Image (cartoon, rainbow, N blue to C red; front, side, top):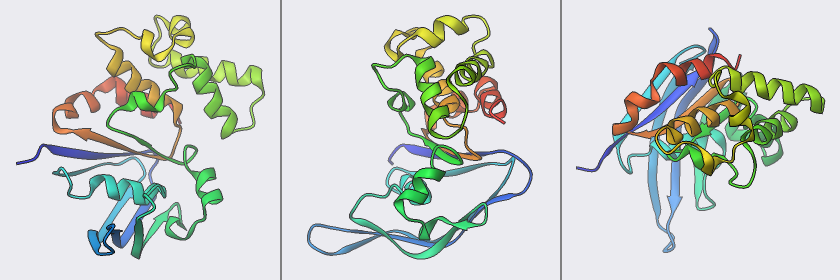
Length: 216
């Protein structure tokens, strides 16, 4: 049996945030045939809820996450269904509209969260870059906000962490810290996280959860 995986959905607040109804996603092969990846998927997530979608490799967890964020590959299409996020149907949004939503209001952490970090940029600079793209803070305010975000999870070595490059993180805690930093980089209303079965306990640890809460 293939390794089990978990699609974890973290959200903030109290109201209904995501409502997916009858979602069908198909892939077209090079021969022209269609592969039905998702058939009639319906799910809802209220603000403040954590939803886990469990299944074997290839069952469609990544396709579901990609469809919700509008990052399906060119050979995939949403055949039917609606994706209501904060009252807006993401399935009908164009690229520019989705770019404004992604990162600011909805985001994803891939199975290797370190991939979300630019290898040649310092951690503090990367957090500031996201704040610049999705906010109106001036440079001084962005630096202060980025520092506050790092303090919330790295209270003992905030300045060193801000000046570090991703490859300079500790070999023993680097993976965990990259995951937490990846959460800090995105300040969405909802976040999808793709994890394997063996990583469940780490993904649900209290420090990661507090990083989500600290972003409100």
